[in-house]
Structures are given as structure tokens and as C-alpha cells.
Image (cartoon, rainbow, N blue to C red; front, side, top):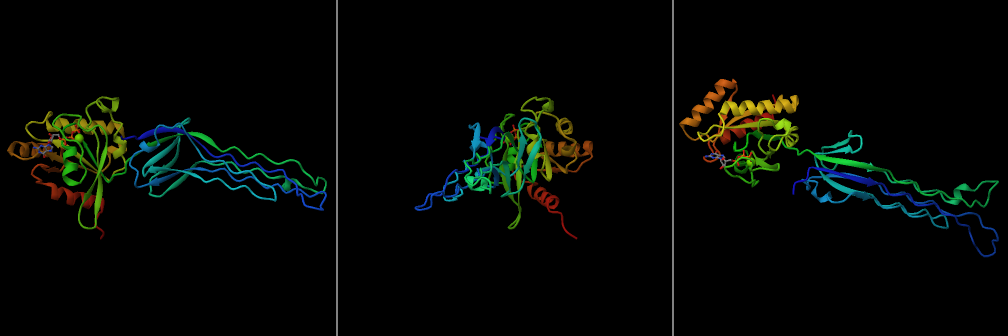
Length: 331
Ligand SMILES: Nc1nc2c(ncn2[C@@H]2O[C@H](COP(=O)(O)OP(=O)(O)OP(=O)(O)O)[C@@H](O)[C@H]2O)c(=O)[nH]1
Ligand SMILES: [Mg+2]
């Protein structure tokens, strides 16, 4: 299951208590204090892992507590510090304070760590309280409580290329024909309900990640259809591919389809709307579709890349263009 939003509490471990203890040795009637300090409580740490793609493995629990520090012992033994609790999250996880809503950390690199709740310090043992006037202190400190907070995790998949288009435009089919991803494909709208990623090999050395998201419809930014909540997954891509069905069976006129999607992404975010975007005419296999693709270019004033995932026509030039945009040639 695809889980991309999650809220729970994190609690740093309590520090171990300091110890009250006195030396008891034969023939030493009044030994001094020898109670050791408590150990530190464990931290709760988020670490990014490239092996996680969703937050599903963390769902279903309200609290993630780290372990407590051990108590100090006699003979000046410091208690052991507790182990930290490491929670793995996918690269692209944004950590927010659930109560106030501000971003605590944006975990966008592999193997990145962030302490969300610190463990408490251990309490000092009675040895530390000995002084010239008080040689037999009977006080020791309690370990400090660990930090507690409620956090929200929000996952933004990190892809190089994002697919955009109305339902049924051919997004999943394109991803399936370029990668080994196997999204569900069917000839009815709203086939794709959750985002998915595929790795598209460009040549022996280079590959990029392509994200397929559910189709958008007019009013998506007001919550129509599946809404625009999946757009965040393609917000950070380098290039967008805007797919427009140009076949004679298309549900909308190509220019209308183009206008709707441009309108929705502009309403969603001007940053997304300003991203490099390649306009792709899909299902171009006959004279009618070729004409519609050419008309779309005329009306929009943009270069249109005609493709057919079925015959694979146009895929290679499109891939080359994507490669050029993702890795611009150095001069
Ligand atoms: N003839 C032809 N049909 C295609 C081509 N690409 C996709 N289709 C068909 O178009 C229909 C929709 O394709 P999908 O890939 O599921 O479309 P989508 O954009 O992912 O749709 P949603 O997930 O609903 O947003 C399917 O029946 C595909 O087989 C193509 O290049 N040629
Ligand atoms: Mg789809």
C-alpha cells in the first residue's frame, strides 16, 4: 500500500537515574560516596534509506519511544547509555511539527539522519555532590525526561521526470514501455490511483526516474476527481512530460486537454507551472492523430513530440530530448 502522509509521536528515552551509594570496605568505617551517574536516554532518529519507497512500514503506531538510559551503579559505575531508535524513511520525506505545521527537516539525500526527539541526560550520582562540608551526600539526580513531540511525515517522491495529463492520456502506458515498472493500464479514466515510479535506462551509463501520477481533471485544484494531492510528487522533477491524447477516440479535443492541465498546474503552483515541460502527443498512429498533433503545435505555439507507445514510434527522439534536458551538454 502507498502511504505518503503519516503522523505519530516520538519520545526520546529518559535518562538513567543517578545512584546513591557509599563505599563499604572492611576496616574502612565511613567510606565516601560512590554512586555513579545515569546513562543517557536514546534519541529517536530518522534516517533515509533508498530501500524504502513509502511510509507504510511505520503506519499503525501512535508512539515511537526510544529506550531509557540505565541507572548509575555503585563503585562509580556510570549507567550505560541507551541505543538510539532509528526509523527508516524514504528519501524525499519532509518532517513537520504536527502541532504547529512548520517544517523541521527536509530529508532529500540518501543516508541522511535527523534527530526528532533527544533522549534525556542521565542524572548525576551522589559522588558528584560530595564537598568539604558534605562528605556523605545522600542526594542523586533523577534522569531527565526525553523530548516528546508529534511529527508529521510527508513523502515527496523524487523523480527526474514527471508525467502529467488527463485520465486516459497514456501516462502509465508510456512508463510501462520505457521502464520495467508495471502500472495498471486500462481504457477507462482513473485507472491509476497511486503514484508509481520507474527507472528508465537511457544508455549503458545513464538512467533516470520517471513518476506516473493519477490523471488530473478540470477543477482538480478544488478537489475534483482525485484532486491535485499527487502533484507534490512531481514538484521536484527536472522535467515534466505533458501528455495529450491525439487519437480519434480521445475523450477531449487535444487543445482543450492541454488547456485544462496547464490551468490546473498554474492554480496548484506557479513554480510547477514554470518548470521545463515537454508537450507530447500520444497515440499518434494514423493520419488523423498526426493532424491533431500538428494542430496542437499550431495552437499552443509549442514544439509537440508525437509518440505511440504501441508502435514505439517517437520514443527514441523523446528519450534523447529528455536526456539533453536532464544532463545538459557541457561546453
Ligand atoms: N493505440 C494506443 N493506445 C494507447 C497508447 N498508449 C496508451 N493507450 C491506451 O490508452 C488507454 C489508457 O492508457 P493509460 O496508460 O492507462 O492512461 P493513463 O494516462 O495512465 O490513465 P489514468 O491512469 O487513468 O490517468 C489504455 O487502453 C491504453 O492501452 C498508444 O500509444 N496507442
Ligand atoms: Mg495511469
